Image (tube, rainbow, N blue to C red; front, side, top):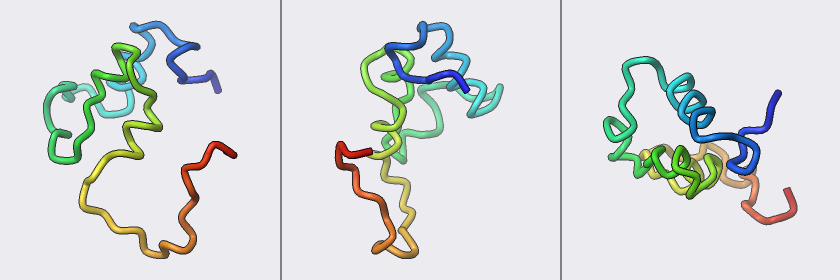
Length: 75
């Protein structure tokens, strides 16, 4: 699998990654504002996908918080 990091992709590739993952009918500025996810930041090369998704607040709760991985740099 090819890296999806900003440094390893072009803007066009990032657009395809987002649109391919979210479906053909998805518009970047529509539908995910409630979660706080602005995928345009990834497409524009300003923020990695993993960081956007980590900051999202979609109202989901972790079933077993003790099993949650930390966001430390030791990944």
